[in-house]
Image (cartoon, rainbow, N blue to C red; front, side):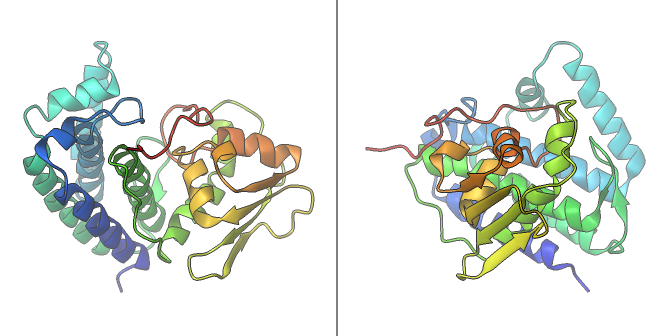
Length: 269
């Protein structure tokens, strides 16, 4: 049986692909508010992640070799962005979009073929298939926001698959601290979110001292660092909850600083 998360990843990719299909040639080269990355940079980044994921899911030796080669190139002084641009030299725009989609389909098929309890090698700790798949969905969802913003477009209404991203946001509470070499609070805050269908998604209900509540999209925006918590409608109560929302990071890699208040927003005419 195919995991629901794999179907959700495919659906997230379909939605992102519709956004990319509407970009003109010049739009691919427009700097976004995410570190000045362009749509070319964003899709190249996603594509490299999928290539690494495909290698991890199908050939661990190939994954180890690819990761070692990337690290060797980075050791020469190249930034992550520069290394990816160099590795995918000349792959931009529409051709990049087609290659990204083809690789992602392969990745989804490879994930669907694995046992549900299988674990995959990654840049950080090994990840189970379900969480790895959710992480790939989260990457698409969060990076897409920068393109929606620079184009001045409102993204489509969220669906139930957003719960996957909220889930990974909650589950990486401890990671947000460990990646910064900070002690992890013993009790994570209660999280209560309004779902797209009007229902409530809730985690850590046993916590009575700290809480985060509000719209699920807002919460996902904060934990993926596409918005500063001060630019959302989230209600954050308690010192631990406030600190977590100021450093929340649901993705792997080194610690990243959330955007400053007011610095990530849709373009206006």
